[in-house]
Length: 179
Image (cartoon, rainbow, N blue to C red; front, side, top):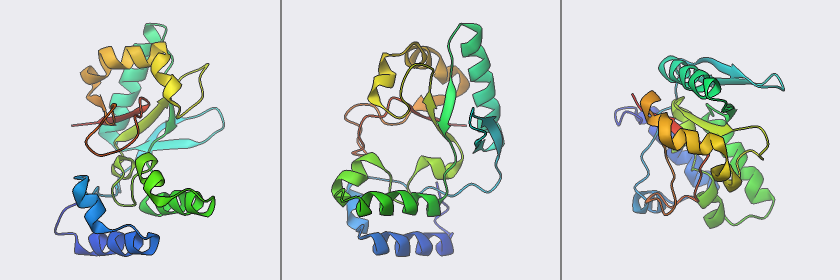
């Protein structure tokens, strides 16, 4: 979460929200917390395409330990997405708007800039072999069942279960490290 004393960050986020047509009232109604953008990040994993996925050091260590534990039980965990900057979140939303997706629908699928757990460097979108990344079908995998039974031991928790109070679509792949 962002420090409420960080007026520069909060003002920047508010200006970005305004530029996208996102009202502060809509965020208050959903009880979305402002998320600070992590500064100290390390590479947690490099995927098969050579893309670096960065997390805060504690989250990266917990991710590696969790992935190793799952692997020892025959379960493959891979990062599909990790740290994402506020600017990248703006690009994602603008791209969806340009494709004609209504803002209300976008905000059930993507967090507003400044309000994504990915900004914190603690969130990972997880995938596994044999399934499409970032799809609800992930809940039917051995990886998801393993995460539900074991992720808490590594301080990772499912952020957006069905009917979550934040108003996001169900995301069985999105897990966040809590220290």
